[in-house]
Length: 360
Image 1: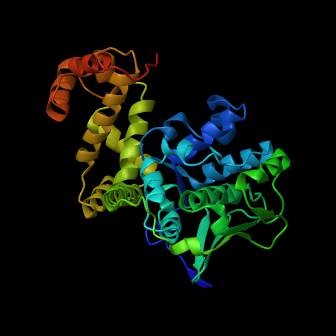
Image 2: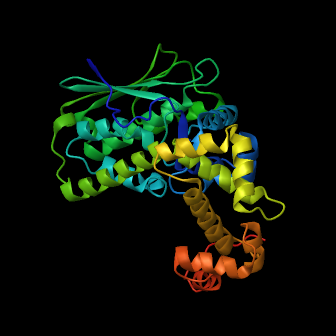
Image 3: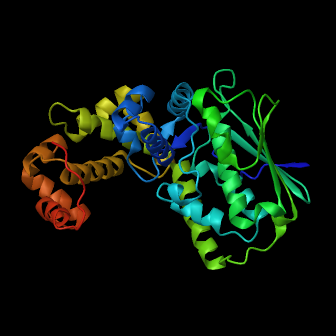
């Protein structure tokens, strides 16, 4: 078979998992009796890492999650029944995979849009006229089992079943080694032949169903999903910029501050933590078309919305934490950048049908 890697959107040189993947894995852990607090404690992932629609978690943190699953004998797959369980975490991806012109097209997209889930492991697509093979190349191969690859192959099998009946195709899964502990009992999830102790982790599909037109294919829905996924890839690419790293550091400074910091104090702490001078920081941000002042405003807006929605701090306390000299300064800032006063913003949240949860 020809070796074709459909991963044009891959973010080269950066290993990460999206926060949606980690939230999904946290839900899997809960299905096995591991609550969120224990999951975060055992993986070293911070609660803040799970926030944000397209946030990222380091490759190292993701690997700790896979090691935890190996220890517990868990296969990282949420819903053995199909796409339903994944939709709440990856709605656009599920729409794309469930609405492609052919099964072959869906499998190509399954690989090419993998960066929406993460880039810690490598998934290669090999294809021929009447067969397709997925090769899962795991990271940290001497320490991890093939459970994560098996979870990926289960999803591939569910995609195939969505497009064609089992009578029109043959699927075989080969796994390196054996699944750990009770994970071995999950082999029936695959609904196909599974062989352990093989040289590679592979998923092989043979059959005429590969290029059969999908009768329910909707090109307009496919176009919408493609645009949305491409935007997500662009946002992930942008998150590796210096500007994004600076904004994250500013948020860390604002959240860790024991007392109010003015703009210059935030800049000084930022430069010290990043090991660069103010001139160097400003010059590199300028190359990306950004300024420290812009990023400070964006970080304050982000944190202000978070505190107004999720804390019981008074407006004055929020203003002090964000570095405003007086409550009036905060009010002017909020009117300018959010179009309402802090009190009005919080009041609107309270009147929402399902307001966000509060923290003390």
